[in-house]
Image (cartoon, rainbow, N blue to C red; front, side):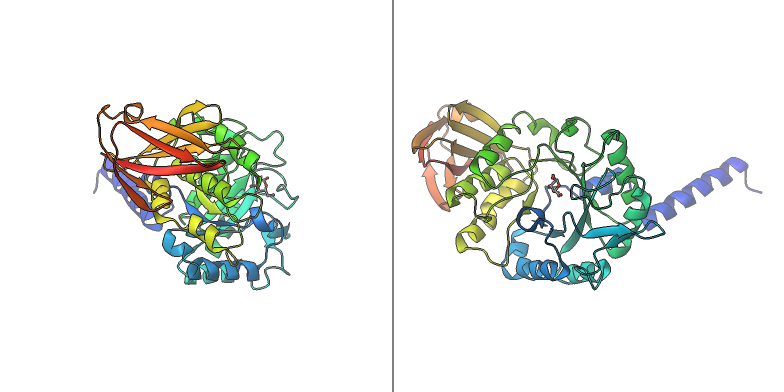
Length: 388
Ligand code: GLA
């Protein structure tokens, strides 16, 4: 006869082990691991809006590989709003049967066959922003359905959520996703309305800090200003999300896209391309796939921060591995301007002589003593890595 205490302990151990084996007891460390570094991928919204279909997603998956984006680190392909049209009589979400004829499972399989990951979108309210059926009250059903399709990423929006408490709604969906046993990266899109950076670590892997980005310089700088002070909340497992990339969508000049991409990388932002990657100009392609700049984004040492602002001229800095730092000089003005940063300002001895590499020119500038000075063109950046 085994003692009842030992029997109970054994039972708990057995249940614990089998839960761990099926993944439904997926612990916090494993879940956090899904975003040890900021996620990278592509999302349909910025370029295509509601014009999504399985042929688009397949083409994008093909282009992700053929363009070299996959090799550069982009991984998730996410269908934003408008893939869903109804719920059937059992409450199961129904994808648009015209636009997704082969079904979501087949599409996920296709994306996976390219070595990529597949994501969808829903909303914590009654309807999505485009009025499609959302997940409030259907969290468990929807999470199960996503897992059955092979979904790897859920973007979860905040429209039509009157009376819904985000601190309940987002954990409810997180728990439903975890309970499926499938690792699904959870992207919280609450637009920063309830200061998610103060409470979303452990709830979601990324949390939007702002309203929607627009394909304009003024939108980029407005969102950028909203990131100041949020750096301390980011780190492995949870990242501030200043919204997706507009690089290549046509509303900004090349230098402006370079500035947008550089700052998003300095901020360790999720890098979700939002352009038509099937038809990219070589210039936009080179921005999105600059490996040295992407490495800055993916370096988990810290999120960068604004060190100084003098009118239109700003200095941003991020610590990276091996005691190196990355400095971005940003010129928001309409004329070219000189910007200087002394090594003391970034915590080095006044007579330090670190090696400086220009990450866009892809050029070593040699050792620089005391102060680094550069001419920054209007609406552009100089981005350098400083290695003591
Ligand atoms: C909101 C989100 C956007 C996008 C749209 C889709 O505005 O913030 O990123 O998902 O909804 O309708």
